[in-house]
Each structure stands twice: as structure tokens, then as C-alpha cells.
Image: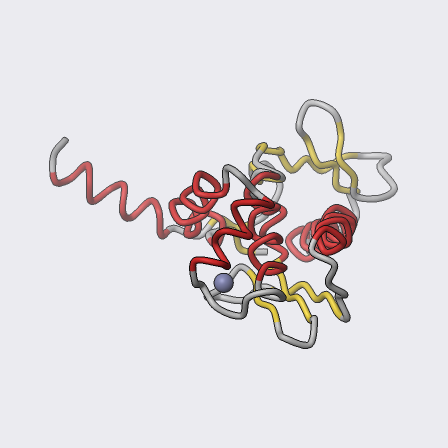
Length: 176
Ligand SMILES: [Zn+2]
């Protein structure tokens, strides 16, 4: 391992990836190729890990973002309601944003915010983030009781927490 190699690796990490035809985009931890397709009426997942885009779309990034956001909601809202039942807490509001610095947040009044980019990470990792935020409805801090509850709801959480820390920058590289 030499200095140039390390330098290349660092640079590579910071290069943005523009979402366009031919790009491989992670969804739930698997890479999907973005393919522009004739006779395709709307954007959709296709077998062989592809996302098909209709030919007439002018802004692929924007289209893929809307598609991923809808997919994210359809996957995560049921998980939030299932896990919030386990801790017997009511959720008043769920919103999905793309915040620069955090993956999720939670208010004492029962509002949950999740970064929709989490749909790119493996399901165990986004489930950990959901559990983390919900656990704040019980403990509004990061004390031992908070982590005990997270552990009860997500026994392997430390592996998911580490994954997110390591891959955070990579997930934020994609420009829609
Ligand atoms: Zn927290």
C-alpha cells in the first residue's frame, strides 16, 4: 500500500456519482443498473437488477429520485408502524427528507424524520435507524437505557450501526 494508492482511494470516495443511464445504484443494498427502455410506460424495477426508465424522460435523476422516494415510503412506513406498536408509542407524523448531516430524527411529540437515501442501504441497516429513532420516543437521550431498548428491538444493531458509519459518504455520493 503506497501513498498514491491511498490518495486515489480518498479521491474516489469524494467523486459524486450522477444518476443517469448506465449507472449502478444501490437499492436495499443491491446494485441496480439504470436502463433506458423503449416501450416502457413508467419507471419500474426489472429482473436482473435493473431499473427501467421510459425513453421520453428528460431528467433521469429527478425521475429516479421520485421513484425511490415512493418505494422508500412503501417499505418504511409499515416497518415504522409495526415497530412503534412494539413499544406502544403513537407516531403523529412521518416525513422523508434528504438531510446532509443525519439519517433520522425524532421529536417528543411523535414526529419521525428519516432520510430517504436510507432506501439505498441494506434492510437491516435502515431497520436499525428506524428502531433508533423510535427508541427516542421512550428515551430522549443516548443513555444506557436507550441502548438497552435498541438492543432488545434490534439484537445485531452494532453491526448495522458500523455499516452505516463506514458507508455514509458512499450513500451521499449519488447526485439525483
Ligand atoms: Zn439518537
